[in-house]
Image 1 (cartoon, helix red, strand yellow):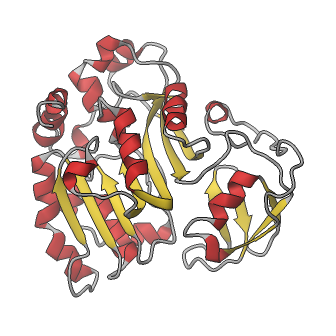
Image 2: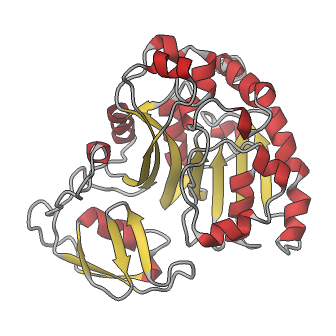
Amino acid sequence: METEFKGLDSVKEYYGKVLKTSQDLKTSACCSTESMPLYLRNILKEIHDEVKEKFYGCGSPIPSNLEGMTVLDLGSGSGRDCFLLSKLVGPNGRVIGVDMTEEQIEVAERHINYHTKKFGFQKPNISFIKGYIEDLESTGVKNNSVDLVTSNCVINLSPCKDRVFSEVFRVLKPGGEFYFSDVFSNRRVPAALKNDDVFVGECLGGALYLEDFRRMMQKIGCNDYRLMTTSKIDLIDEEMKLKAGLIEFYSMTVRAFKLELEDRCEDHGQIATYLGTISKAPNAFVLDDHHTFETGKPIPVCGNTALMLEKTRHSEHFKVVGNMSQHFGLFDCSPVPDRKLEDKIGACC
């Protein structure tokens, strides 16, 4: 496996030796531009400074309702997101971080005991494994063993993205969730930039072209995934702007469930009501960028959305009326005003 992913040597060098802290980055691609909810910001205050200084991410891919879950973080780096997740899953949950960069793994492992004591746990609920996200089997992660897979601006660095997505859906339990932030582009990145060490290290050279991402997901049987947030990336460095030309780069957070979903939104006359019982979301539950369920308010949903609420860890927090025994054609999803790039991906609405 070391030989097979030899092309990742420049990435290891960039994140292990070239970058000392997030202040050394030349773009905003690997900096979190997404606002964290207050409860996550409060946990972030408990995270060790060195862990935060060596964090490189483009979003906040941490969903709610995680108590007792088993979570796998791909490209865990210094462990910032893993430690946040550690607090959220609690002492009965488990967090596994996988990263190929030895220097980053060392930072993360050095602070396991610090965070265990900080969170008041009797023993660590977190571990870090040196390995490749393209080959999770070699790290010992078994089929159908994980409730949630997260990743923060890492998959773009992989030369074998299709294998990453395939591995994610192998290890997820039925109804499990893939929730990740990464860099996407509005057109395919040319070979010259894919082989540019700085462009790759800054998370741009391997940006996922939206349509190629859609095709990869369909290939592994994921017909409907949802956008959470989208923000355009600023190229701070003038030379990088010139090289990028008219390519636009976006930081996006996406969620996908391991469910048998249709490739279009179909209307089965179903109604979903959020019960308001998720502790961090008493007033509303946000499924994606165009589905917000206010507590107690019945909302018509397509068949795919109904499954995302009924057949996942969220099931006890929703009342879904109706089933798929009746069919009324395509679900009427009116476009959300001012949506542009987002309209191009995802099956629903």
